[in-house]
Length: 182
Image 1: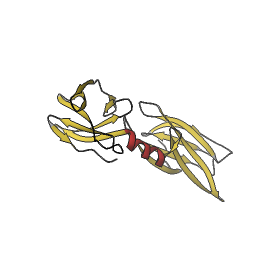
Image 2: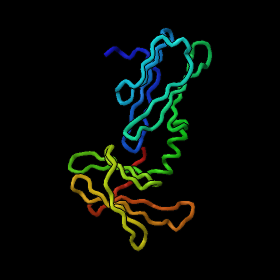
Image 3: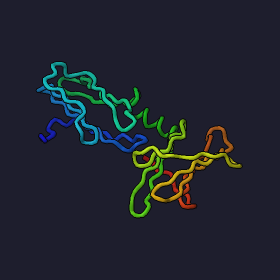
Image 4: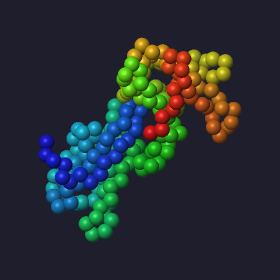
């Protein structure tokens, strides 16, 4: 594998199926553009005469839409911005904080990343969409699933405050797991 001499940008993007690394090479003399997702080459273009533009591709198991915008700043300086689902990375992250909960835990020496998509109530664990069983309980709902023979439950309870909405709590083997900040 050739050395990434024209590497100009690296981003880490947290999706439901995991945290993905996006790398971008831009050869401003050769016009080369290469996009890598998790170390795998997704796009390679040689001898692009137009040095500005956009490269679109997908990321992860959910085939999330992504784009890298290449803009000239001044002279031979360029700015590279990443968009996820049509939003700037900053907007995407802010939106994601509202629509998902993420927990990181260690069971039997193995790290697990559990993500709840609040709009669909889908649960992801280390990149796999989990089989879940939901039930209504006195104070809200419970979503049950199993990780490595451990019983897991995400409890959804109203905060009683309109601005806060519903509070989601992960319980594994009867102990509460603190939410992770990505």
